[in-house]
Length: 459
Image (cartoon, rainbow, N blue to C red):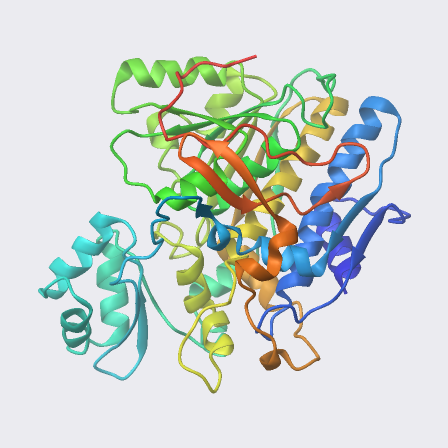
């Protein structure tokens, strides 16, 4: 099944290879306790990265390398942040105690995402409750689900009703997403072809600006770094962050602070863009464009740039401007409901929408770089968690008994873990799971705190 899924991903990019003999995918789902094809979908997305990395390497050297990924490893990779551990230190929890599922006055289930302090405070203020689970649960029971979902999202907060797949299919946002492809690679202007750089990796000397936070975008930036790209993560000094995710997605990256409310820092970013190859951002559609950073404007500054717009609910539909995260999109689109059948409400045992969307973005960027090397041009790549959810929801289901499987502990996947010295201390973490015969993905530089480096390119 993974090879079928892989061919579908390649076809989305207009690629129909005569042979995939150099791509080996082993194993099948279930790996984790879920009816969804978590491992096989992840393996296909990672294999797509491997296919394109091998293609770039062939274009540079004439050598076609072998690519291998196992379904088991691909499933585990979608839980990468869950296996991060500070050796001889404390690993912070990812989740706010107020995040989770609550029952409304009309006996529906709604999910609040409160992992950032301002989102948590916003929910507490709206409900007029104390900041503890019991008080929030009691206050939530005073409101009908749809009213609560709409009002919270109107305030820029994060909530989603747990819908069934059929219920979601009747929603206008689902209709908008169903008309979109899994991802888009759009040529937005002409420029001269740019030959691929020399170097020991497919993406050697490719410069990437990563303006993303949680989690699909940082996964994309990390994946690009694994294949040799020079990735600089740009963060605002005023926005909150989730430290374990910074640690786990920071390998191979530089990290600088820029405050786009300051004209001097905006000019620094424009200067970085002038010498960049990829501009990766995951703000809500239009948010950066309003500050002068639309793909069309960036293509004028840097002809040949590849701009990536990654969002929660896509750039189309009534929910296009809503905040969203993997777990919320699972709840909204019916994935959580199906995962929870005959059990208490729960999400997938992996953050598949985040990781797979990050992998797809990596693949699409590589394909845009290949096109640029032949035809030139600046490109816009668009994808979203909801588009991935729509695709993922329609892949089919496992045929074996998944309920007998369990989520592996760190002690059960020691073959996939490694230790790296970082600015946070020694971290135990998942090593790259994709195998390539000539250019195996690398861990690279150890993670650093946000803002650790100056906002300037390093050779």
